[in-house]
Image: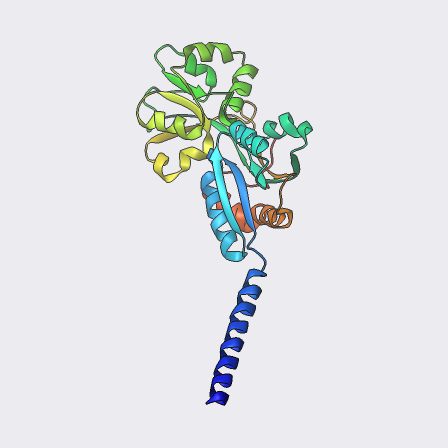
Length: 266
């Protein structure tokens, strides 16, 4: 009887030891790397698809935070959290580079501004931003203070000497490309200036007409994926940068209406 009790106690002790060891070993396994990417709204569709493919390929979780490019930068700066930043145009990097938060960079494609109207272009808007000043055309444009679409709109209209005229004429200013397209689809304006690629998104293509602008007026703008210098997952972030800039990532950008990173810009 005593021997049976001793054997039972020994088995209980061994089982307990195995459970403690197993729990300890699991606890020591390295945590799955996680990336937080700040992504301008215009690029959220290709970046979401790239992130999903990357997660399947690598054991790395990717979270995307979307918004206006300037708003995103300020959010990253204030929080000190995150790994990568993709604004809608390169002046965002130029403007903030001296602050030291934007490190290594890769070009993942190009976007270009265009005029957009309702399908069929009922007001016969020409491929010239100056035509938007016609009295019978109602216009909504981007807000230069909140996002890349507004900043690029300002640059183009300033170069033509009509920015203030367009501000005075515009029915309202929109914070980002999504709200511009929403206004267009609701019939709130006859025309908008917006990033060209968004006009080819499936939910926009059926109702929006894209009117291309000459590269001399609307130069294609590089999409720069920036490594944030305070990133705690730099190796994983660099892996994502390489993936997005390589052929598989570039095919996804082309699929969503963007120019790839091999585009020749005049």
